Image: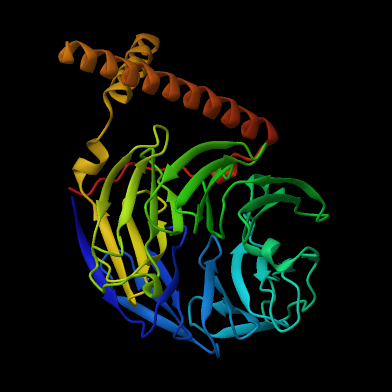
Length: 347
Length: 53
């Protein structure tokens, strides 16, 4: 189906992998305190970002690939100049930072701070001064604090279309929608029965997929937080993404090492799983990792996907033509109807 | 009889998929129209299909 490239550059488990908007770069972060930047075409490493003193939980890049931003267990968020790998600014917090994501216009990032060291979990929005990157405001422009018990703490967050809302996943499986300007809680729904491990959006940010330790992933819309689809797996899921071009979702996860009685990779269910996004069927699996997949990411053009594993490896898979050709019969029929209609209009 | 039952099952699956697909397509059309109206189409990047042979 595809040719994998195996990238070994991290000493410890991967925590997140992400493509830039152009798709030519792959960014990876891990528990080894370093971020790596790779060419996505061939898996060659372009450079590393060094400066964090703990696990880097999350990384993002602005739409022009001028800046990287990283969130770490060392209680900091760092802004980096993409061209040189120079650290331009460090924001300091009172607990580990688990997640970071640029908004669409890239003048802000949302971060999730963990509940630890007597601090409550929070979602915060930081301004990013692109004109003078070394002069950043250290204070968050918005702070949403979890006043409920620790089970309700925030685990992941991302921006909706128009940067209007913050979509937040909780440790207890709930998903909340906040007004991104005022921080007002607009809606909360029960989605999963366990920790929400990841939220990734559709290209237009009108819907998103959540993955959870409850062995499922679900598809929700931004407007109503309505659960459209459910994808069932047989192991805890750590990550899920929505593929452009094809109507698929990719899930990654696997039994945690402490729950696996044998080290055989087949026992731990360490595979990337492909589901049909609309029909919810599992279509196929891709083996390779020797431990749970901690993150999966799809190329913005849908031409490849990358997975970061607990085993310290990054696997990069470029899709073959057969992947793009694959359609259900009902999809083929629908497509030919559209094509016929277009021909009629053109005629 | 088995074949007939199988056929009926297959028919059911196909009809179900058809309705799921049309439900999804019409929802997407309504969302795309809404985002266009609100001027949030800049999220949508124009993509040239690039297939690796």
